[in-house]
Image 1 (tube, rainbow, N blue to C red):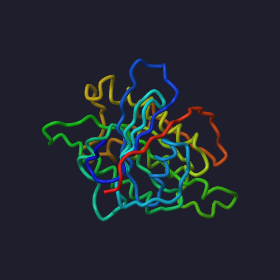
Image 2: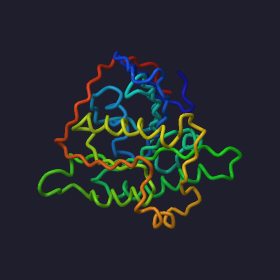
Image 3: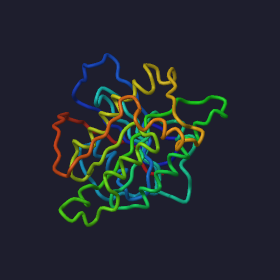
Length: 258
């Protein structure tokens, strides 16, 4: 396997055949967010069901997961250097984008505005070939740190997260704990698998979602507050939420850090 940016390249495959479709949809997912919000933890949770809390964020990681939730996945987890903007080719590459912040870090929440703007700019019609707008989900991670009667570590409320999802015209909003619940993470990707055909169409480039890619998000927001995107998903989980999702995974890892 080769990645366009040096880093780890990992492959995962499921032992369980998904018979819901004769051919799995291939979905390319880009994770965006500040360092420390849990991007890599979410990717590893989805791929392996395990939680690992510490990672080297200096390199991009590519995860390829076969036969999970009726789809095959390629997940790009970029380096965490906030001094550099996201790679434009990656922004245009993605079929789906997770904008991830920590509910305990308001700076990471505010960063979502900039990341959404850069994503919009990468899809402007001035390019010779304009790609279809991707599925966009807003994810508030680390709810376990903001749980309890005092909510002492929580800096971003659920209401603020839900409002921000509407403002940036996300297709859905989730609050999760990658540390505490694999089922919450799986639910996010189940939503992506469900939304992809609606937003991208049966063929990824045969459908164009009407979305604001010219910087006029605020104007369109006023017109669309009562009309959410097709299939909009809004789910809030507590740290004790459970939703059984059973699948056995066999794992193979290839590649080495460059």
